[in-house]
Every structure is written in C-alpha cells, then in structure tokens.
Picture 1 (cartoon, rainbow, N blue to C red):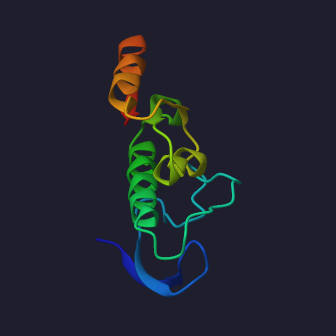
Picture 2 (cartoon, rainbow, N blue to C red):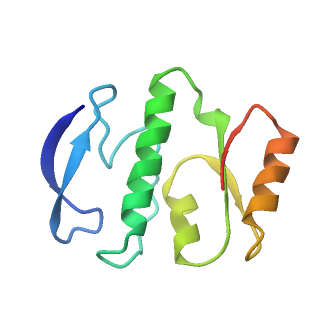
Length: 117
C-alpha cells in the first residue's frame, strides 16, 4: 500500500498524513509532475487533496509505461482551475462552464490522449 509519513502540507501549514508510492517514491517533488509555479491556494483548501491525487495518478501511470506527453488537461476559470498551473502536463484554460466540450475537443483532436476535465 505504501509507507505512511507525516509531512508539512504543500503551503507549509499544519502537518497531515501522506502515503509515499512504493513504485516511484512519489512526494510533492515528484519529477514527473512537478512545476516551478508557486501554489497560491489558501491553507486548508480541499484543492490540495485533488491536486495530490491527480499528481499521484499521473505519476503512477508514467511509471507503468505511459509518457508524460500522453496526458492533457482542460480547466475552467477560478481557483480550482489553477490545478493546471501545478501539474506538468499539456492543457488549456477553457471558458467558464465549457470544460467538458473543451476536453471533448482535445480528445477528438487526439484520441490517444488521456484527458482530465
């Protein structure tokens, strides 16, 4: 299942439990998905958990043989959409309320991509 450790949250506030991946040793500095963008979400925001889950899923798929170029993301606007800034994959910011059509367009343009709306 992994190794349980206590680390500081991404924004450096209160500690929380995190599982390190036995496959790639994933943590917040995972080379597969790390960016240099400063995370500006508020401490305690649930977007941090969504970001970590997405990073782990992508890192695991990369260690299983997928290429980083096989992934793309479509996001809307607002704080939650900034997840695209914090994951090192291709993608596009879409219009408010139009994420699904944007993701569908990406998938139709390249059916081989794994697209995250």
